[in-house]
Length: 402
Image (cartoon, rainbow, N blue to C red; front, side, top):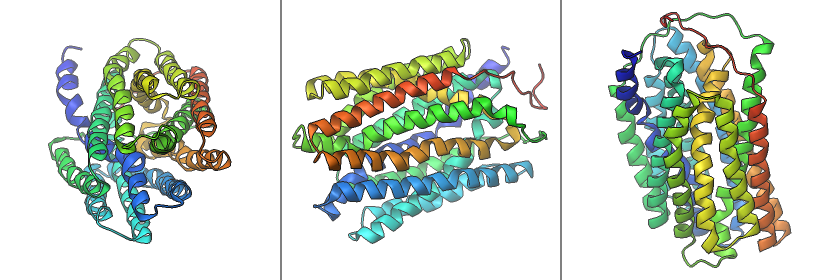
């Protein structure tokens, strides 16, 4: 056991470094940069256009990860490591992001955004399988916790950039950081993928399906909050700088998440993982209802911190639970790509649902109350779903001795 400790401490950060620029892009694009750019390109009718754009992006994101993950698994089984596919995606994503900041055409903007989204998800699909490739199962909680912290740090940096600069600078900065971040993969040494397993049986998918449902509920609630919070600051709270207000709330959430991610990830290696994941969803649900019941700027920051504490746990333990629920490790990138549909399908539906609610209520406070309460309900359902998982005995790799 002592021989594995240096591996875990030394490599946990290295394995997760590229999550920082990926998270930077993921957090700031649809929450701030795209809404702000849409306001510039279409000062009227921006709500409807954002809802459609967000759904198109979500649909593109939903299609790519499973296919790219399957390709990554196939290449890995033939002895090719995953870094080539990760690098290829980044080399397309980075220039597309830079061009997004320079375009003045809505059509060109949407086309580049889709290109960037596809390339981003190609990199992500291959990269997210690296943890189960190189980390022993008993350390998945720890390394997933470090991954959660990397995601949060990236999101904080992204929101800080997007909240204090115009969208042109934001997009260019993201492109540059993606290009720099992918170079960290040169320091990563993947071990050969040597296992050969039979196909998964139907009964193997019980936990995977429940974790899928739980993830879908979490992402639905998260998406419906982040997509429209900037317009809530602008239209209801009449904040003179809605981008800054959005970044501040998101920053408070992420600081709360940073304090809980690694600790709860480590805890999930020692306690029942599903229990830690289920309890993590409860502060998020309480925060969602808090936003709905007391939608005042003086309270929102406190609710954001409460949400963040739960989100940190959901981020780290949910990821470890997802890896653990994959039926067969030989298909880990493909199945994590399928699991990613639980993130992407809600990203298609939530903006349409929220846009429909706000359109029917004229963007009023009551409409936003319904949107925020819907998020709270969704987080609560995620907690219930994850409690239904049974857990499985660890699947040993050929090169993992007892």
